[in-house]
Length: 366
Image 1 (tube, rainbow, N blue to C red):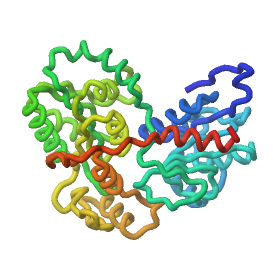
Image 2 (image 1 turned 90 degrees about the vertical axis):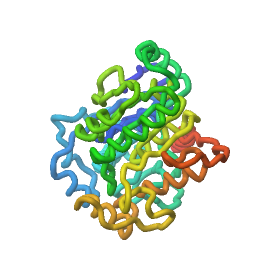
Image 3 (image 1 turned 180 degrees about the horizontal axis):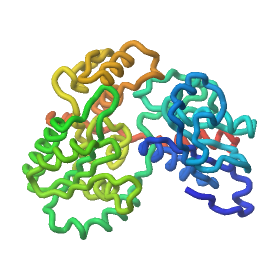
Image 4 (image 1 turned 45 degrees about the vertical axis):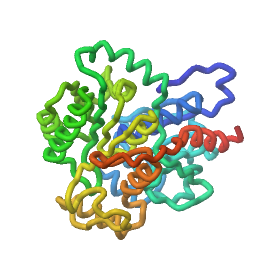
């Protein structure tokens, strides 16, 4: 994102900086909010030093955790609004507040610092934050999916997929997340189940991986697919990513349940959404039903630690994806892959972006 000019009409609009997150899903939300506001905006890429994780415990304003030589310039004129996500950005946002005391700080997700240090926190259920005057609770993350974008990108990609038989099933693939591991075995299971769906339809699969999909898992998934398909391997900022085209062309969408961002994007289309559990047996995402606790022992030390944090630590130390899964299934907006259709009418999808934009405008009396 870049400056959009210096016209007199823009001069009265708050100058906005986006402090980029290391996570692509976070950045999608930040860009969507900035675009929704329509104010002059700059995107600031931050590169962090190795000791940044230790500095965040101090909660102090500063740039000590930032590799300034590898980051975007942070210099005047200072912004009126900072939109950020990722806990490394908190110290930078607080430092910017020192440069411009009138700065408004909007954080997306769950911050490490006390909620009262932010003008607005935009959050979703998996973070389990409390109700507060400066906290906006959306049901799902905001995104940049619109009917117009899906139609345009679907039209661009349709000729490239003309050799495949319709109907299409989109398969959106995430990766390991918190206590849940997306192993090659899980990827192969996804390939087999998605293939069975397409075979029953007489159609094809449109598969795309993401930044968190490991190479071994992607290879296992590709090897397990035995129906007509198009397989796109995620390539960072490479042009021509078919993600939105696949959403527009698909009649049904399979999403690995580790990615709340992709779930939000899929649900926004109004098409049937099927959740794929990347774990199984005692480790499954849905194994504990509506129990507040999660089986504490994971398949690795990292997974075990995450499970202990979900059960016993304050919410800011972890996130519980099962909260979102239960919400989507209960609202009829998604079902678990392999379950029979519930037959219930789907609830209307909340416009979280409009809610976020309205709250931010309100910070400036607009």
